[in-house]
Amino acid sequence: AQSVTQLDSQVPVFEEAPVELRCNYSSSVSVYLFWYVQYPNQGLQLLLKYLSGSTLVKGINGFEAEFNKSQTSFHLRKPSVHISDTAEYFCAVSEAGGAGSYQLTFGKGTKLSVIP
Amino acid sequence: EAGVTQFPSHSVIEKGQTVTLRCDPISGHDNLYWYRRVMGKEIKFLLHFVKESKQDESGMPNNRFLAERTGGTYSTLKVQPAELEDSGVYFCASSRKSEKAYEQYFGPGTRLTVT
Image 1 (cartoon, one colour):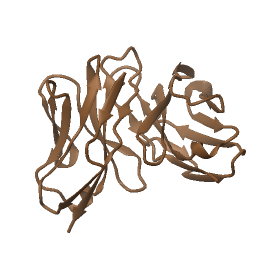
Image 2: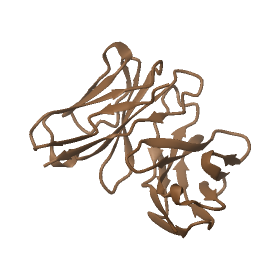
Image 3: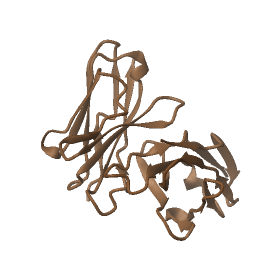
């Protein structure tokens, strides 16, 4: 079984400032890691994923995340946020190569509010 | 290609009534997942179809929930009878059969309110 902890439920940040959204996970097996974003009144959209290889992964809209196996973390970062980044962000894991089922285990979400 | 669609977008029903939620996955996606987010909590897995077969229904909360995917295309999730604690947002997601099966595409969700 896996679990995901997003340490911050809400993060306010000024426009053009950097932001880091934190995510820690727990699992007894190898996992794939994901960040999803939900804009108001929309579905979840995949921002980026880590499957294997380079621990720094880049996603859409200028976001990146770094996988740290020793700290079991997968923090999301953006060097300069825009108003349009205001949304809820979800960290999720699935079992790697998971016998045909890649059910996701989610964190509780972090609401990012970008202040003009 | 068209994305995952869900209907209705919002449903308000009274306790004891029946509600059926529908999900249309991306065309050609064999995998279909249902998830639920109860207010204030995390999004939780309910079940997984591969085509018309239930691969994993370990997340279904109880026997008041019935999911079907006849013909391996769209899926329905019926709640009968609905209880107050069933309120939440129900998400559907789909993915390809093999290559990139881990990459799930989500619908906008159905917000269910049970009063």
